[in-house]
Image (cartoon, rainbow, N blue to C red):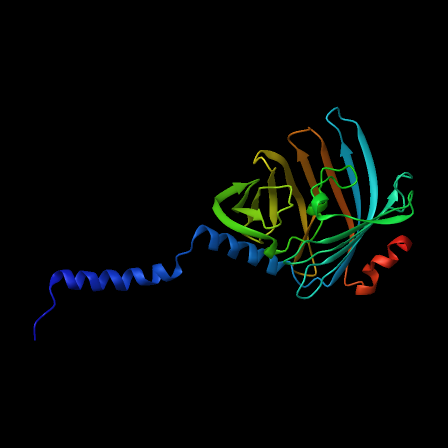
Length: 265
């Protein structure tokens, strides 16, 4: 029996060694999607929640205004979550309410009730990039961040504020999005977003969102105490302070109906 030549033997050894590596190799797009799917998976299972929010708006000259809002959210199986925001103070926005029905693969449905006009206004798809109630958050920022709304690309590992993070770039699928891309720092320990940079339609840095002071609820659900959005083009900022989180309070789909928005209290 003729023995295989040295070149053949080396080829066999290389194939045996490299095959597992080839199977496990991922493209940056695959890796980015995988990280985002894991972050999404860890955020599931809260059922519903209530919370209170203080929104602090500051212009480039340092002038401040504050708004106090109650928030309700409902987890929806096989679709995006539902959310309701009700403004309590100041008097000029008291009674204003916004309802969001998020979706995985189509544009979110959003409605705004304006008590001064006594009518419900539907937020058009083309307008979702506009500012929400004068803040630095856009309407599209307020829907649940479903994985299917973006495509992804892993960029690198990086330390941010002392935490080892994945840095993932994501690109909105919605053609009416106000962003060309977003770059997010996700900590490796718990897969929580730590920072997101938003780039406008001209691919210029528009604003930066930082998540501060995470606390754990229901044994494995993390929520930030604070979210700070800074607009790098206008110098304006919006700081959101969260408090009094309550989970599994018994909210149902009937609590998030458009027809009841005028009566939201």
